[in-house]
Amino acid sequence: MPLFAYQAIDKSGLPVDGKLEAEHEFSAISKLQKMGYTILEVEEAKESSFSKAFTLQRKVKIGDLSFFSRQLAAMLVAGIPLTRCLYTLHEQTKHPVLKRTVGEVARSVEGGMSLSESLSAHPGIFSSMYIDMVKAGEMGGMIEEMLKRLSEQLDRDKSLRDNIRSATMYPIMVMIFAVCVVLAMMFFIVPIFIGFFPKDVPLPLPTQVVMGISNSLRGYWYLYILAFSLATVGLRLYLSSPGGKKTLDILKFRVPVFGELMKKATVARFARTLSTLLGGGIPVLQALEAAGPASGSMQVADAVKQTGASILEGQGIAGPLKVSGLFPPMLVNMVAVGEETGQLPTLLGRVAEFYEEEVATMTKGLTAMLEPLMLIFIGCIVGAILISIYLPIFTVVTSMGG
Image (cartoon, rainbow, N blue to C red):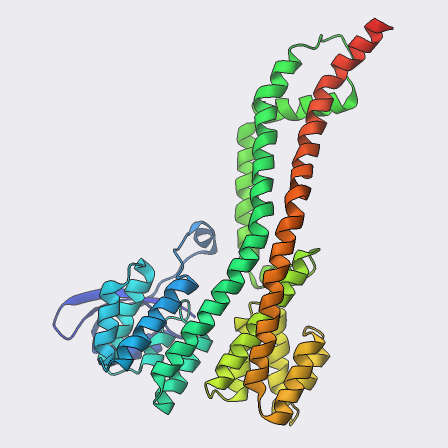
């Protein structure tokens, strides 16, 4: 959704400026008018894809959003008016992005917009699931209960992501350490040994390779930095494109060992989100529309979209999910039973709990397995470099002994 920059005057006559997301310029103007602003200027804030590759924005973490939801629910239960709750949270929030967003939401609500409409102006922070749950709470007069459910959902999602992060962080850190060790040897240790070898003595091929890499790194290090920077920017640009996102989504399920972990986490997130939405009274089609993207997988989102189209044709949920081939038999069977018994939210919650426990167990097993393997990996790399360095010395000593 495009981002529009605006300059306006609020109800008290003070100048305000900022940015908001809207479908088009007229929609942005309409939102600002509902907020009670006198509009001075509105224009689309365009940003090139090249600048996006270097832009680092501080994202709102799931934990921050969960804490905000829990606080807002508690204040509403205490009987505090919604506008006052939002302004209070705006003052208390320390996260700069969330603080600014809550302030804009508070001004929108004060201008006459509903909470769900105000939140929908910030899709980068509040997901469609979040907005749909708040809207359902407004319609049913139980917004406090919906906010509590959202807080619980976000806490479980955070726990799931933390488990995945703990499983992937160790090999990443070990790889970085291995690269640092190799670079240190190439820059400082290998050159010392190169001076020991007479120029007229033929060197083994492994030694020549190590010496060539060392000389190349020390002589043309700036070219390596330039190539690494260009590759990083190019990769970020590609992964931010629709084709790159789709390719990454396919590859992450095919990575050995970790692919299975990602698949189980995706299923758990989808089941948990759909359970929360259906338990909150959201219609099936609307719940599926929000739960698909919330799973974090484009493949799952497309399959769920096809499921929604099949439901419109009179089919159930379980059949299309099974045909997609992305969902495990356990989930499909539980969905079928849930449709027959009318307990779909409850059974989906049990499926989510099962796969969340599977992810936690698998994470611990992966960490225990990867620790010795990564140490062996580093040992092999360092050992290969040392052997290639000492090989000429062994050759000379052997020839002298002979």
